[in-house]
Length: 206
Image 1: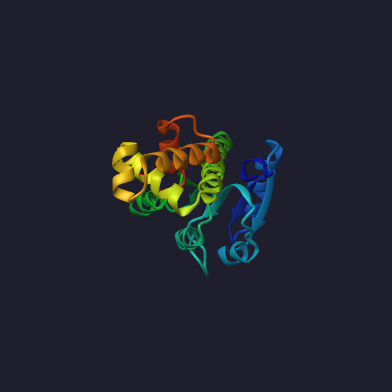
Image 2 (image 1 turned 90 degrees about the horizontal axis):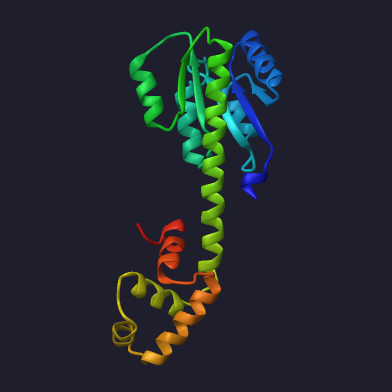
């Protein structure tokens, strides 16, 4: 499961001294680290089962931190990002945050500030992992439904009574009740409100 994966801080910085310093501080805090000297190296190594967060330099020669962020977003990588830069730039920080970064720190970063930011990013990962696991669980329940059961479910969630659903689908009231009983059993929902939450979790409802 996504929530049970071992967590790491993934450091991306072209400066060896900075990578070593960040690694030492974070590992001293008891957190595992993987480091890369450029964004492409991380992208080449990136695995879908990675868990934790990313600490990346903003301005690197071959690929900026923002470009790395964009490529990770395109791949659907969920790891929260923390940007570190020696060039405090408000427009860039706003752009980074809007694209999903959890923090934007200016060098030299005090140890306590860095570790607090990493802790917040790890909490963010836990929330993402929990939500993703819930979505996967809900999706597996919905996948077990027949086409008819899904149709009954969506009509019920739209507020239609069994009688109205029967009329819309051109089937008997009793058949609707049977479909509804089956779909509630398959999804584990005891009532419509629970079914609504399952549908929301897997993106079927807003």
